[in-house]
Length: 262
Image 1 (spheres, one colour):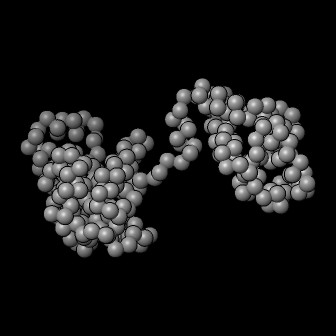
Image 2: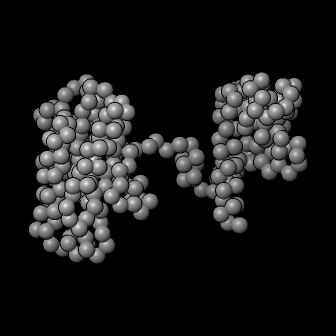
Image 3: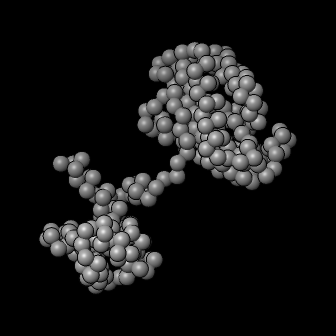
């Protein structure tokens, strides 16, 4: 069956036997393009159709063989599977991975298959989110020039998100936040920046920070008070703390840029 829009996934879910209140995982399969061979094959609709039918049939057979509760359909170039579980734990992740590995190992032909796997979602209305996650996992693999891969969707961390911003904006935010500590030249300033980092990583605990830095607790307290005075902030204030944390991450990005450009 062909789905024309993401919204139809929800409306057809009940019709195709997807059960309410179970954990739903979206798995997407694609045929890896292989240079000129695949491009040439695309000129022949019949051969493309045969290839897609072959993949569809194998996915269907492997789902039955693995005894997985799933709905299989196609959407453009994607083969989409919605798998349902009472609970989604590491055991279910392993089950999905083994299923995919079997499909890849048993696939006969000139091409390889790649897979993207979403997080689990509970309400059926959230299936479009799972679909988008599986697609993003696939695209991430292709961005890394991979083939025949299995990619589980991973939420971007703060550093990855900041890396997408223009460098001039990052630099401005970094300098405005850390002020004179943005480019520490003296040992005292370097010690202050290091102390801030460890202090924030230690949930603002003086004793834990002093233990990690091998300095006296009073030294940590003095450095933190001096830093708060320099930056006109309170590291125990959630908004101030967040700004400093973000600035420190930006600092690591800017340093990596320097290394790459040197």
